[in-house]
Length: 346
Image (cartoon, rainbow, N blue to C red; front, side, top):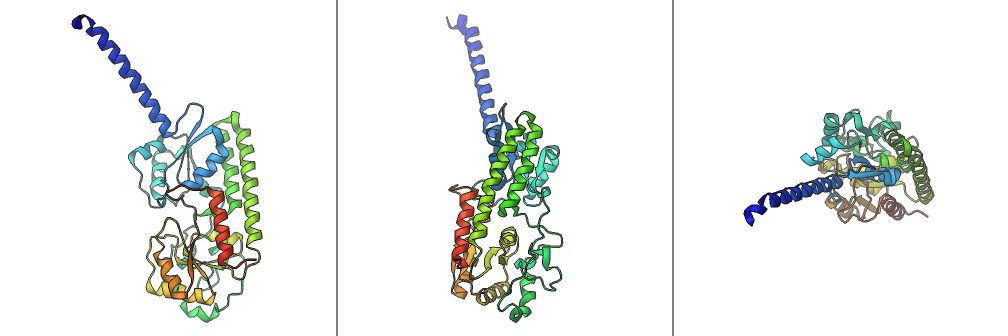
């Protein structure tokens, strides 16, 4: 009986294994984000995932390369992530922010990439982690994205401390600030351009992408209005931050950032830099020293203890926390409330 049924049994087993293999392959594809009726998009980090999902809607499946709770800048890519990039129909990234992603895109997906850094000119990086003081003063406009003047109590008094402030964490000539998403109006423009690119991939849905981008812009303009009104009348306009990630925000809402470090938060500030920041915090009567969700608060706590201030979170939104709570809009509104408190806004 067993010998007579062996061929049928083997055939059945083979068929079952093939079916299981096909199902497993489909499952793997779905996990990677591919779907026959959706555009398979890979995003470098959270803000790019968010704008792609809002503009793409149910026509896209988005894979975020950066895990919640991790810092996206220095991330390394696994072979499977490189495979996701090479197989994606579109890769949304920001050239210069994630070197590993830049390399993978150049090698595997250059013809299928959307670089948000090309949508609008990026601001120059603030030298020395201090975005309203650049030594000679000739390059003040544009160097930090500011084109306005403020009266800074005690600014001239501390002019001799500029070298200490600029000695540390200079980002180099030509370095750009990547944190463009912290200006809601710029993020809206990225959404508009992304809608155009998605429309090229799925012309039959181009009108849908345009409509979603317009809706997204409306929400972002509302957020922009909340920031403008909320920060219009404040006792102070200087914020002390753990690193100079907030140039776009400070330019848009006429604030000034004093950074403990430059654009790379992992850099350790020198004792001279810490002393210079503490002195400026006192001069500007800062009540709050800001730190970030994805970076250790120890340095901010050191400055706060030195000047008798408290600490609070100001989130540059490079990624969500490990718990994944909230989204771009809720985090930005939490930032607004933190700023209003710290600056004593009415």
